[in-house]
Amino acid sequence: MLPALTALLLVAAAVPSLATPPARDRVVVTFVPGTTRVERSAALDGAEPSTKTQPLRFGALSAHASPPWVVTHVTPSQRAELSADPRVLAVDEDLPTSADGVVPAQPGAVDAAAIAAPRDPAWPEQDGLRRIRANDVWETTTGERDVVIAVVDTGVDPTTPDLRGRVVSGYDFVQRDVTPTDDNGHGTAVATMVAAASDTFGVAGLCWQCRIMPVKVLDETGNGYLSDAASGIAWAVDHGADIVNVSLGAPGTMIALDSALQAAERAGVLVVASTGNAGNTVKQWPAADPRTLSVAALDENDRRADYSTYGDWVDVAAPGCNPAGWLRQEIVMFCGTSSATPLATGSAALLASARGGVSGGDLHAVLQTSAISAGAGVGAGRIDALAALQALPVFIDIAGTVHEANITRLAQAEVTDGCGDDRYCPSRKITRGQFATFLDRALVLPHATANFADVPAGHPHAAGIAAVAAADITRGCGGRNFCPASGLTRGQMASLLARALHLPDGTATFHDVPPGHPHAQGIGAIAARGITSGCATGRFCPGTTVTRGQMASFLVRALDL
Image (cartoon, rainbow, N blue to C red; front, side):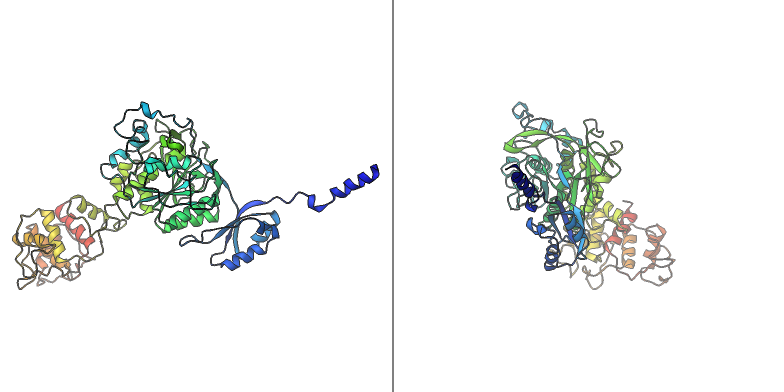
């Protein structure tokens, strides 16, 4: 019987079905922009059959992100085949990622019952918020409900009292459903740091009125894949997030992440990301992408925390150990770059609340330029929420314009509050009525009553028009009319300014202002005072209508504001 048994064993060993199947890698297949769903499916069908045995996760099929990608598992030969397909842009390894937070103490480590505080029990322990001067910003704003912060993380516990009524619909990219409930605690900690209400429970967040959008991309162990993080960012942008907090990282990137960050940038959404807790200079994504605001962690002495990843690619830093909410309504001391990042995110949310419509790019810039130096490797240094607020453009539509500084001075002098919705409308033509109001505010003229046929008592500029008329700055446009809706020319403005400032008559030296011009003396007067040098070499352009931006610069120079 022994020979027969031996033969049987040899045959069994040769059966193909018992061979070890080829190893399969999790990859992100990114398609050429413009490929249709049919073409994408055909490309995947062209691979070996086992490619189709895994669930396919199509991502970035959104209003903003392009090109689309799919997550699948492939053998090396399948990967090579897909890489050679002309419909495929890239086949990237899907990098594992994990939360960048460490909780050295167990839940309940902050003894809430032993802390005496007027409102939030953990507030005496929240030195990090005071170090970034968030409490000083609260004198201006505690947040606005229409500012939505996406927390791309382990989900959020919707039952935590600190967030009650302010958790909007989200998505779970781990289970592929619409219930992104936190089963780890990390995401809830981030969310409470950003937006916990000021009440008698738990911690005080930075933005008390802001809302949280939970996007779950990490599992109960705090681990996941970069492709899901990319999908989460793109999903948040599509669904109305203003700011995205990403307290996780991986030591590499992929086209899918680039697509998601490009979508955020185009939509004016700020992505804030943690640098990692490896204590070295190895870049982590998405933080290493320059489109994100990357945040390192500081110790209690405002120097880089030993565990914080650092380098010349880091933007800013924030205190790395802070009380935070956890699962089961516990309070923990939450440490890591994951804890530093929501301080930057919450600061950005406060700024967005104070200046509605401000872009993610402006938030990124102002948080970075206003930071306080904290040594090497942590970018511009510790964020300063109050300094950032003070450095924000007064109006959201003046950044980069030639008149930005003068418009800001005019606003600081309370001569203007803009044209509405945090805008100044610098390129809009200014009317005679508007200019009268500007002059009235700037010169603080005595109250008077308008006496022009076309300026009824309820006219929005009636008070200003009456004041400048009573001061003998203007006599109207003729025939008992003021023409308040008519545009103001440069020549007219020169005459008004010269009379308002009681300037001596001057002689105009511009080629386009002859001696007999009706505004020659006024133009000469403001030129002699240094208020104007003309519109071009040797020219004043007296008949050109003045814009609101130009008017600001004229007034600032005329009044030495």
